[in-house]
Length: 491
Image (cartoon, rainbow, N blue to C red; front, top):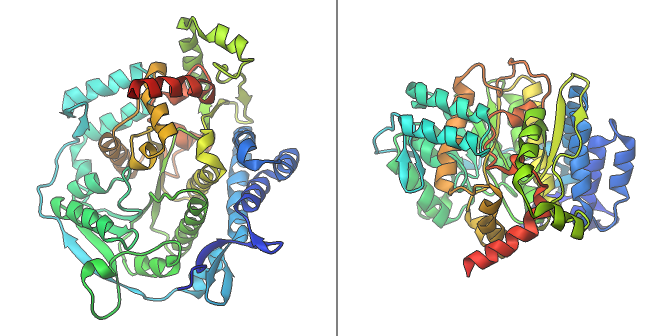
């Protein structure tokens, strides 16, 4: 394939621009519910520095009514598929059209059978221990008391603990896009006996890890292998979702069992938007052809969410003990220790929402757009009657974060503000257990027939945000203090 093959931003005025596509997609998403906000987005100069307010405002616009939230997500996804394209050779197709026009059987299947024992109860590695049973329940209560997890997450995990048979997922299939993700559930699902359809890049070090994880587990892993003569397995296994999405869709459709499509992909910069867009097009294509599928996402607390009035009150109550906040807020003209949740939004349905705007500037607008696309798809899928697991996972010390010196320092300084940064090993098991809860419990928020007053409840229920939602101060306004503390702590 040529260098330019695969998912690309559409050409506008002779060039492909991530900024132009990003502003157009967000503006199109909100246009029908807030034309003034759409115009503001389209006329925002220096988008890289000023993107945060428009993203926060788009979530606030959706909080005002259920129908507006759904309209924003639907229109945003429609715009996405207009502003990104799929290039192959001399063809350039609309993104979603490519998954029909270019579908072909490129991959065969390699099967790896697990040889390890099947785990029979929920075991969570944490703080040098392996927590289970009553000890795990105690830790969940402690996290709730510290504002690290929402009570609904504790309740969901307690149900998994109380129903250990749920963890026998030998009857379930999971398609994992980005199977080697540090935050993804590959390891725990394999230990619980799952059938995995693993998709990740054709890189030998990734597949060495994926294969070892599958072999140590008690399930069965299926991997896409290129149809060609010669070459070892590591030279033929894997697929690039940026350039081979249509062929991956064809491979996944060859499995008749119903499965949950988990989106765990990540890339840096503009590649994340391209990858997130192509993954969304693949998921949309699969959902359009199969009525028996479900979807799963991991949301991040360093994003924008509408949160419940109870969370707002809990955050405000935590401000009373600080003796430095008011002076620093005054001296910095509210740039430091700015009050979180200054106002509440009344929805048409009668609920009240606060806006948790915890976007981190150094992550950039491409990251914010990519995560918005995932939230939009989860919300729209549930509205369409599809089981949609979309749980907020805590900030964790993954390699993609710790390689950034600023983010690494911020994470080291975060505990001073009551934020807990998790080890990926802990996060993986907790989020995998929440996924199992969502597919086993017919009363879970993920289930499309469970009534919710507002679609945004999907992201609040079961959230493990690490304390970010309970901050009495806007996260960005204490980030400089956290950075200083983090750099000093390293020294």
